[in-house]
Amino acid sequence: MALLGGYKMKGSIHKVPGIDNRGRKNYSFRVMYTIIDPTSGERKRTSKRGFKTKREAQTFLSLIEDENEKINQYTEGSYQTLSCYLNFWLDTVVTNKVKRTTASDYKRIVNTYILPYAGKILLKDISGVTLDSMFDSLKIYGNSNPAKELSPRTLLYIRRILHKAFKDAIKRGYIDKNPCDYMLFEIKADRFEPETYNKEELVNLLNLSKNSSMAIPIALAAFCGLRRGEVLAVTPNDVNYDEQTISITKQIVEIDGKVQYASPKTERSKRMVFMPGFLAVMIKKQIALIQKLYGESESVINTSPILRNSKGGAIKPKNLSNGFSRFLKRHGLRHIRYHDLRHSFASLLYKEGIPLKTASELLGHSTIEITADIYTHLSQKEKNRAAEQLCNSIFE
Image (cartoon, rainbow, N blue to C red; front, top):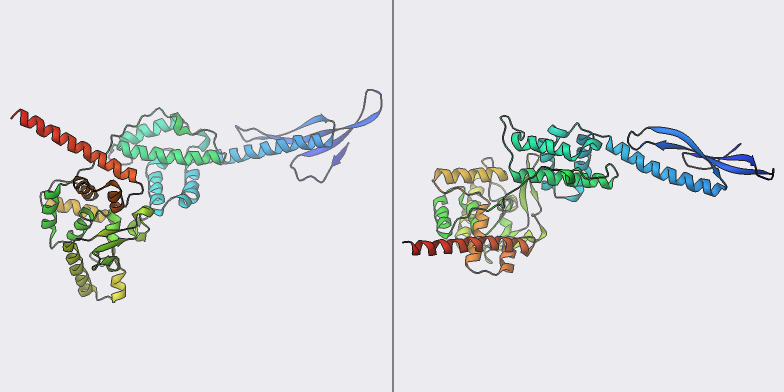
């Protein structure tokens, strides 16, 4: 029996001498190869004989090696813990697919909610039942002590991230099914309806904010439609007093506790917005105050945010939201989120009959459908208000 060398395969092909039915010498071929158990990853050496030609033996061995490679990839990947896989996924796939702010948010969700419950479980053992149990616990206890029930919106976000992670695990051959598709746990999130201020409330809010640090942030969101991060990123260079416009080209974000500039939310978020005269006056006063307080060079001032914290640095987005909430409470005003000032701006556009496309461009929405969805919501509220007025007039 002779070994046929020269092959780069893990198995081997052997030439086996024999005798045919007429008593003549002939040869067949035997393949020595390894079988990998797909469930345990264990390897077993075995053989198969009876191949009439070397080509037949080579074809068989190639098929075996290809299958073993797939199984090996599966077992190596599926026998890692969920923690190991998700950290790998966050560091490679996620960072290359999404914006830095989104990647940071994914990492926070994974570390805060997923890994404490299921991080030590092997990827191959994650099932719909496993996730049902995890989500049952998350719904009731969250990650807080004392327990704090998570909102349906947060639960949906957690499941969305897991579904994406498992989908990529399937592509890598680590698992063959997405466990999220086999969950029985139901998550029902009501449609979020933002609170808005009407024209009178906005004017009152602006008047109360005069001579305070909230004046410019309120005006930029409520009368220009800027997002929170866009508000904080406005610099003197972005302001054109002659054209009465503000150029939106960036936003301030917080990533891993550090405040930094980032590109706008979407490409269509880059836009020019109208600057009311009263806002131009406030911005000029703010820039003069910065020059007086910090004595910075003109080039530094022109490229730095016009809104600063007590130390002269950029303001954290969450601090702006918290400051706005405290301002409302201090003045006894109806509570809305800071972002709802932007929705209030959209409401004013709707009531003034501004075309959908124009409103979409002013708001910097990625698609006109987003603006249409907001307009539809506002339209329904108007219909409800009209019906209520009718009923009140009937039963007076």
